[in-house]
Length: 212
Length: 291
Image (cartoon, rainbow over all chains, first blue to last red; front, side):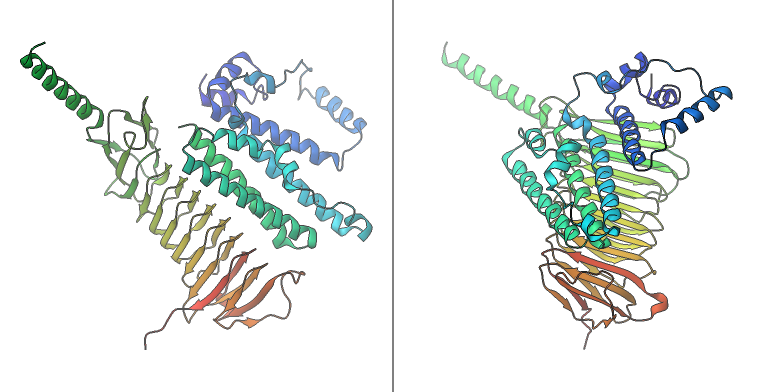
């Protein structure tokens, strides 16, 4: 199966669980990243949906109508996407989806925070910004993983990455402090997004390096 | 073993070592030529070594590669209307033996993507989109018009000169970024600790955004500049030597740090300029005029 064929096949089976898809995904990090990103977006969409989730009855009614119209077929067992990637995946292969999840997480956080800031003061002050580490770890951008990935690099290069990691963490910390100080400050919020983008880029560059 | 035998062994060994070293490190020149259509694509991935792209005459891509040793190969493909070049490192390759330097001529309207870890990346006189990425790579982009320019580096310095009417987006962790005569609807630089230098007129009624966490930001503008400037340094100094006409209200509610928001020149042709740093210095000044 080629990359193009895989992309076409995702229209039929979108979780990459078919045997041919699995074989291709095992050897093609690019397509695997694509599928993982699709999954991440779907998961994040689920999180976003929670805010204004209609009752299950509404979904059931829609589903029944779609089946009546013949627009969707009967349900069949679905396999989980995640185990199908196999054990050869290192943390680095999760970088693209992890970065996507991280940015989505920040976006959701900022959106939620924005909504909180529009509420009465008692609400907005009850949820201070947490340390950046928890968000990073949750998204798979763990500093320890980065250090492990560059452990085999020459000392000078390791020092560069370590230094930049420290600086970008300082950036995230300062940006969060600014958002805390004034949750309505759009510039501060944008800085926080940019700080996370910088960290994701650092991980991306480290991965590029380690793959050589 | 008599003296003559020892001499023969020594000479043979020396010759063998010379031949082997010559084979391993012999620099070779390779050339590849591809006929392409309009708006073609070119991507080059080169871990060690430089890549330079200049315009060719006609719809042809000519790749000249200087290959440092036989520990690296040049893979080349024409896929549809896209030329793909990759330096393929073989076992034992290191930054010296794995080095390939490319000089490439490509149609001016080609979209170009260059990737190198440590070599210099250079693109000039093109009007297709240009994307350059490299950790420690030195990036030099010049004379680009009506195209988007995207650059990413870890600590490699970035210099962009004479780029008009395109989106320019630069992300660098700690490299110094210098924009000289760069204008367009969107010009954005994001850095963690690198300094940002802008020399130009913020033209084109565009959105200009220069941000660095701890790097200094310096903008040097001509007398005829027209811009709405919002600048803030949370902990650093801020110097306005172009004498902006201050606005009454800041575009943000916080009075944190040092801020200014003002305009200069004609409002009808003004660009929006945002300069932001947490601990760096911001300095706005005018070109030194000749007496």
